[in-house]
Figure 1 (cartoon, rainbow, N blue to C red):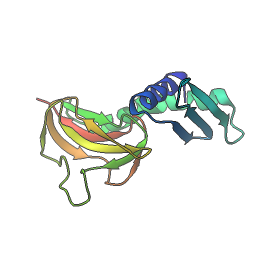
Figure 2: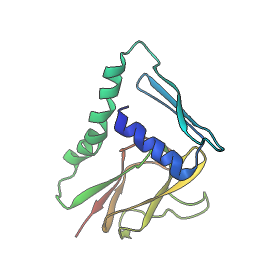
Figure 3: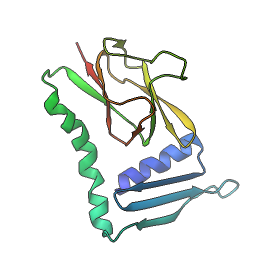
Figure 4: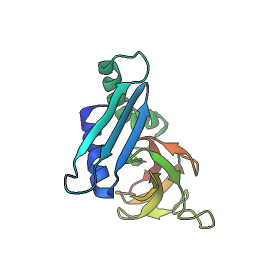
Length: 160
């Protein structure tokens, strides 16, 4: 996990008013805890490699994986007008607002930039994910209830 990703997590913590965040990725464990009250700062409680992997190798690993995840989907995309919607955070993917509800989108569904396409639950907070592009859903790449990573492709969208 690089410094940029840690800063994004801190910003998300502030926006969602989370008091604690913990992630373990490829032998690296990070735990952030925010004090509530007058001081209200964020402190790093633990940031250490879990295994014997050196920190620089762990820091370098996620940076290529985030851009390569959409690139990995790119070879399967034969049309230049097909874009990928990726997960904005680590969490659990939900295709609908409740188990009894219909999915937000399915293949063939038209979407606008502000259309909600799914929910990613992170630390008991339900985060609506918007398409951010207009077009038609071509493929749903993740199953309902599946854990997703930051930058992981969720949907393929054909733009006009």
